[in-house]
Amino acid sequence: MNYEKLIELEKDPEVTTSNFRNVKLLDKWLTSLNRSRADNINPLQFAIDMEISKSDALTTIGLVYKKTQLFKKFFRLLSSTNEVLEDTFNFSFDEDPRDDGLYSYERDEYLYGAEISVALFYKLTDVPIYRPSTEKKVIAPNFTEQIAKKDNVYSSYMNLMGL
Image (cartoon, rainbow, N blue to C red; front, side):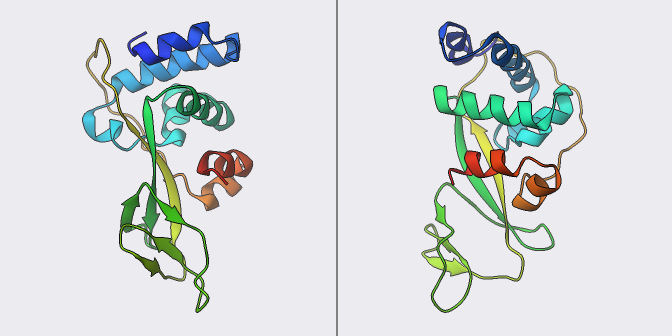
């Protein structure tokens, strides 16, 4: 394994053998990421690249996020045309009494739009002990509520969002 924080999970009694197999896959996958992709980790990309179920990918990333300090969770607010409106570590689903909207703490204002999507991403906060060369992979869609519903992983999405 190439990340010390992941090695520590092997000793954790809450981590099953099956979960740890996926943690090993995550370690391999994270090691292959370039800097840009390591700053924008999409759980669905992990599933596609490592050919595991979306549910297993979400469970694994959620477990690693909960048990280690390997990732920082952030949210990407997207317009209906997939334009990035904002990357934020802190926002609220609270409604403005005047209208529906998302409150941005960074902007200190409500964001309005007919279809604002919230995509879940993680940022890698550690470096591997060893990094092999990388190869190009298929790019996963943004992990939004709509995708989670379509792919039947909505409860995992809501759990990872902290809701």
